[in-house]
Image (tube, rainbow, N blue to C red):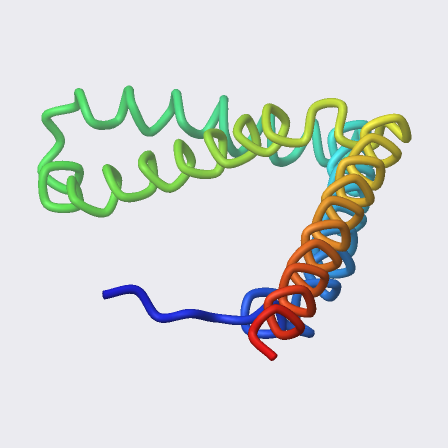
Length: 142
């Protein structure tokens, strides 16, 4: 059996805060995008991290794994973990670029705000309709 609820039970005070949190999260993504852009444009970062650490040292470690040197055989797990760590960093940076691509576009934020305002208006109209129906039901029952 369904229980009857009123509009105040459906539309809580927490809903308007959803807009603020969502826009704050969007603004944080914009800042992340800008920070990532600065990082990837930094010549020192590109040289030391991308070129030397990820690419050159990764290739060196891969070649080292193919060696039959006893020390390499003994340290195989350590070498593999280093290669995997470099791969994780490289994948993380690629994922960040893909996720944040275009996120600092001001039109996206304007569109997000527009969509939330439409949602808020629809919710307000629904609350008004439910309140009107509730008032009509109360006057009919008297």
